[in-house]
Length: 158
Length: 143
Image 1 (cartoon, chains in turn yellow, orange):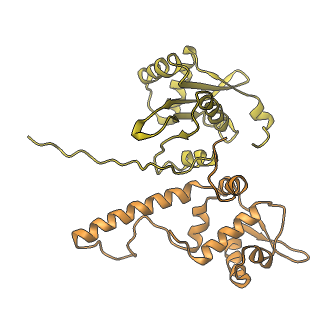
Image 2 (cartoon, chains in turn red, cyan; image 1 turned 180 degrees about the horizontal axis):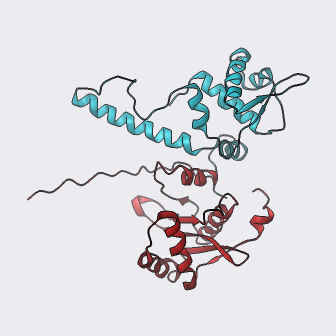
Image 3 (cartoon, each protein chain N blue to C red; image 1 turned 180 degrees about the vertical axis):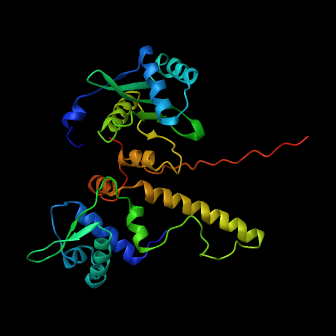
């Protein structure tokens, strides 16, 4: 692994606490344009406050300022897959990107997954979300053995 | 998915030069390493130079240096210089297939193309260099 830069060394990763939820709501609103307080409070209850041996809600901070977060959990036997770690949310404050914060969040989550006993990390990204796809590819992820399929549901009629 | 010869040569050259942006290599040196035509590669390098991805180095021996941003330059950026990669498998101006089987096949081929495009767009030269260093072509692991 590459040696950390001074900026990367200054980043601290820790478990999310209830007081961080306001930051998460604000960061998500900044990125998506939609404020979802109920959703993020619920996410904290599910992933930050319960079953912490398999659910991980991590926060990155630098010099006392919050920089980003990542959420993941270990899941077993979905789609016939042996236990693996799923990453399903990562956000870094705009303007604080390209400084290794996202990579450190991801590495910290992978450490949590390893401690939980899984050996594979997995995520799902919209095909047209090039920047996030590039980020995960730079972390070493490649196409896995599953293909996501979907279809619009036809109207069942009268 | 099969890329044209010029596209592959361009990717080899870009990856080879990006390994060490301070190093200059001649077309012959790169061609020798990859066992490809130096004459053909020289033409490809001129195209890459016109796109600003490599620069011709002055001085004894000449050669080229990498001039791009490896964290920004994607495989698609390089590929698009040499061949069209579109999500529509039809040639320009070609009408949609008129048969139901033709339309269904078109849909499947379009899906494959869209995956290929998303892959090429999301892999930077920096990521390719990690692949080369970590796995020598094998599967990488997350750190």
